[in-house]
Image (cartoon, rainbow, N blue to C red; front, side, top):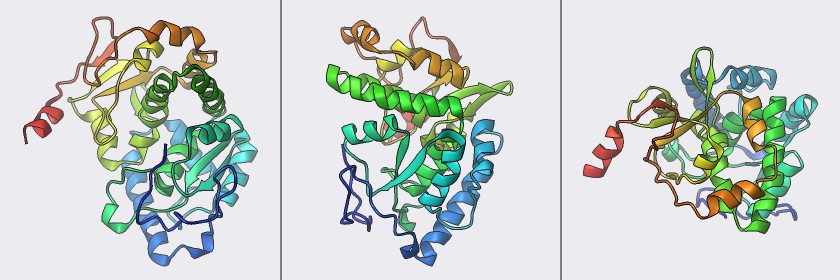
Length: 289
């Protein structure tokens, strides 16, 4: 899969065989660095008390700050010492097989471009703020780092079995939009939520969405929304529990879900362990406009 922004100045940048590019850090403008700073300050404040403690502490360990767009090479040097991962710049979303190969070898491909001012509050495709602020901190957690490597290897296997759509749902509902039980309540660890000021509040505090305890097969059957807040969020007990559930060959899991019907994004099931049965009011109001 690929997505291209007309505003993405890296679109025509020379690419290596693994789709990586030169970040060309010294070519960012003062306005682009200022945009990062404002995005960072706003989201760091909103994340307090809402993001999981693991992510917040990792931001400090990696010295992420409102001091200009990070240099991925320098950031990687810090991250590699902690978990063996590196962050590699790419122009845009890369093909699935390339993405999985990077993850399987403990490399996270991050978009090098930063969103334009006109899309400051929302951007559909991942930019450097989404990827660095949202994804990279958790790669400093050894358990989550192992999960991401396992996901990359699992992606290669899923492509061979024709089950990529099921595995994509695992990534969506955990890495991008996952919640975790922590400190007596729910906290955010998914990058899609962490990098969005509106969804950071919505995912935890609005009555509209369902919040459902993590169940691998249930999750792999559940559709998702790509252009709005999620109607359902899945909650893990810990990163260790997530790794335990996923550190396996999914061949048998795929066989079990293969002939079962998909579950709509808004649906709850009688067997669900619910943290919140959503009212879906937000979505009904939008649909009626």
